[in-house]
Amino acid sequence: MSDCIFCKIISKEIPSSVVYEDDRILAFKDISLAAPVHVLIIPKQHISSVMDLNLEHVDLIGHIFLVGKKIARDLGVDSKGFRIVNNCGEDGGQTVGHIHFHLLGGRGLQWPPG
Image (cartoon, rainbow, N blue to C red; front, side, top):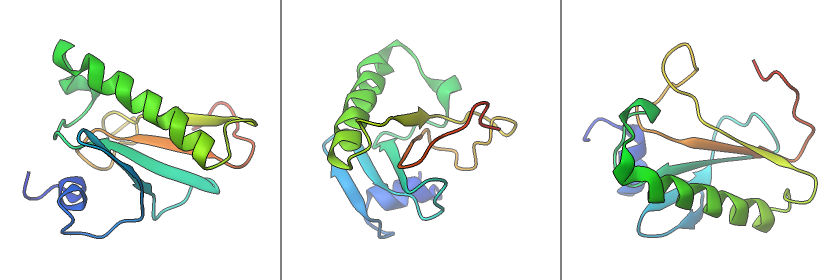
């Protein structure tokens, strides 16, 4: 999508601090940190939100979580713990209309989150 900020990051029109990339996903450091480690993991395929997922996306979503595990290990937050979060819709806190997952770690995370 031409007006999607994450699609522009994927196409390298907008620079980002990439921590992982393969043919299906891109992970980069969030510019608005909510924790010492805050990485966004996004599919390269434009999917607006969780509400647009279907059975063809099952492997992709599983891949995102496996890569999240690798990133947590690479960034040293795997042993003490981390969180992978998806916000869906306005009331859920989704601010970009491209499905994405926040990997947060590096400090104690409280519950409930919001």
